[in-house]
Image (tube, rainbow, N blue to C red; front, side, top):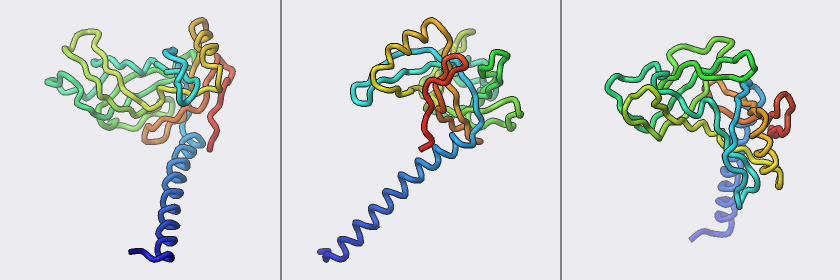
Length: 194
């Protein structure tokens, strides 16, 4: 049985460990937002409301569907994904939006050039036969953006009539964090650093 002093010390140690873990998570996200490479992706809306967390938009991107024939290291006998990581190489277009140029399962064999960026994702849904239009759907962890209460529907309706974008910050390993929701060149909502 624990004495009062040992119980207090154990509780303090546990609290310090929990605070340290949460601080580590927040500091990692803030480091990406502060110093990651910025890219702008064109988005498509899906759904504007979550009963527990408020208004949000589910985001779809050009990089949300990758053609199977774009994957450079796809083995000839591979017929479906097997829950694996993927890296998608992006290049900035003339319109300012970044689009996919090639992809690799696992890691990219060469580092991205200065006018390119790599985004890391995870593939759990696969494809069937290797037809001309077969695609895979990576998850990058940037598929939702939460908005102030009551603004989800208005923004979703606006997204149907004019282009919106998401400004991302990419870490060197391809980890992505949403930095801001853009309406053309105008920043609508910016994620706080902490």
